[in-house]
Image (tube, rainbow, N blue to C red; front, side, top):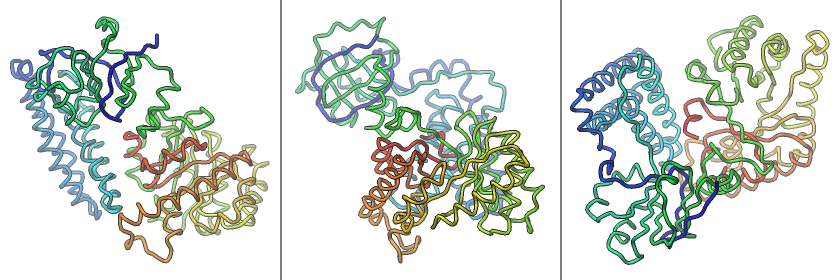
Length: 476
């Protein structure tokens, strides 16, 4: 049952998580180190880490791609920092997850678009390590500790200093005052902070329950309704629980551009494949034969577990009929759609619709048709194009570049993104408005789509889906 605990808020931060009462026996993330050492678990976990690092390193060292050297350096970073976590009593799998996530966000939020793009390599390396560790039969289990909203009824400044801040989502000091020594010290944590309360805190009822802490209003909402969680999630930029204005869950789709993407794709962690770029996948095959396309589409259908698969249509019209035919044959085994790589006129969409119409009777299946919006020129004709599409996907990166023309991608600096973000948001808002009036589903894709600056503004307007490379899906 929903409830509310009132106090005095000391900052404007908020967080969503589970409540946990402070205990001196579990004061920090290294609390189970003695138990781990006593049972010889630390050397076992170190050994597991070494094996996993070695296997993944070999994978990259045998790869001639331009990113392999960077991936090896990332592995070295993960290796060193994960060892530190294991010595604190954390298992190898959890250590790799903590460290790879931290490195991922450090790269993704660097402000440099090129460094941000390389964060995908970090996510990929962390994913391979996690797969290596989970692939072994788990014979031992160290306690997995997750960040919590901590309730500390009696805690000293020295004990506050010993807390592992990465394990804290928020802090509630019910017996402190705004100017008490512990409250003043806790200010430095940079997390939601509430002090003082007349509420009676029943540990047996509150321990482990879901909650929202609001440091601005000075309240903790226990077991909040879904609408309340969504409101705070949007404020935090948490896509995993955010919903669009229509209250339908925002779909997370995968972008498949290479074999590694297909290997890392998991139907359990996504709602399907939003963009299957077969030209990139089959770049070594020339010419592209229909049977090769059909085999690839069948593989995608099997990998998606019956969820939606959207095939990016070829840039060359000579492959259009082969692609549509292979897609219709594969559609017997899955939910298939096709998506134009770019649409600049009604004629583009009508041509594809006409090609599909001539073949639908032969296959007795229906393909949905959509398009990527990659160019600012589409804004002037969006009202004509949207009614002809079942869905549109805004490619935030390409649209942003077109708005900054004649600047090239390599010339764009972080300040360009900051200074021109409103232009992209206004363009996207215009497209969303047109799609809503025509009943066309609308989504976003591209690396810029991950930035809170964009999706926190666009989700409430009716965005229904976001498409990202597989390594990123687990981080949103």
